[in-house]
Length: 407
Image (tube, rainbow, N blue to C red; front, top):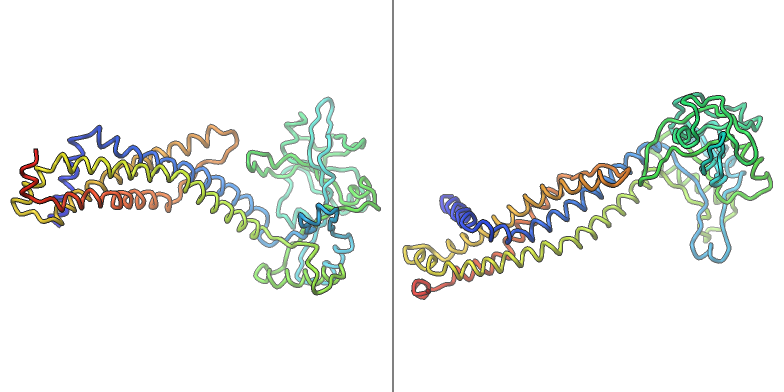
């Protein structure tokens, strides 16, 4: 232990004696670690934000939609759900608590007075708010009577109040869409932004109203069905049951692929996590090249240091220092330079990550996970060991007589 402490003291004394050279030696490590931490903090901050969005989709909900392979789409073949699928699931799957079909009428121009904006209009049923677990913050949602009468009523996202210059309380106001006037009956609770885009700029209208606009005989390629379950613990079993019902309804043969897909918020979150992990790995690998450059710099400077201190090494060996003692001293010096560079790089990367996140409009706050901090220090120490071995070994092998005669 005494030998270790003495080696550390000697390494720190050597670093202090050559402050500028030590800083320049560690610069590669500082830049490398700062780059890695900056990239990780930005990507992880984005990941945290998106994960929270997925958590709000409803843990016990599933979405059924058409499955279209790229090759089949290029050939002009597009699968679509049918309105009959809604009743098939409702009557044959007992574990479904609530079910809500929906389809998009696309992006359309919405008008209020002299103000206009382009928003996505979606036709849905009254049960959607319970399935999605999102409710109105003002007014009410679409009712059964609205649906039965195909009324021209609308529930809007909060962002439209600003975009259309609506009153703070827009209930009872009329907005124009598709050459029809729709009465605002509710405003949905705020969802925030995702990837810098607002999630509160949309219009919901009754499902039957949407069908009357689109045309009852028209094929709806984008029909989807949102489903909430009675028992989330049996989700895999329920998905298999739903798949069996839909395959039977679509008259698919055993060898045929599903022309539909059933997804959950959990699946989407896992897929996104895999994507984020891959991006983090690739980006970290790219910026880690700076760490390699920094390690080579440390090795070069340590080799120069061995040459400069050849006489000092000879004196140490002459008074009883062993080869392993000399090797440990130089190795600890290399590791100390690396770890110090890693600590500075960590602080710099932390600040850069948060600074860049604030500079980008609507970008989520940066987040540095504990494993990134641990990885930065371990990697820095590893670089010091790997690139410090060669100079340390050279110093340890010096012959004391030749070293003492070195000028």
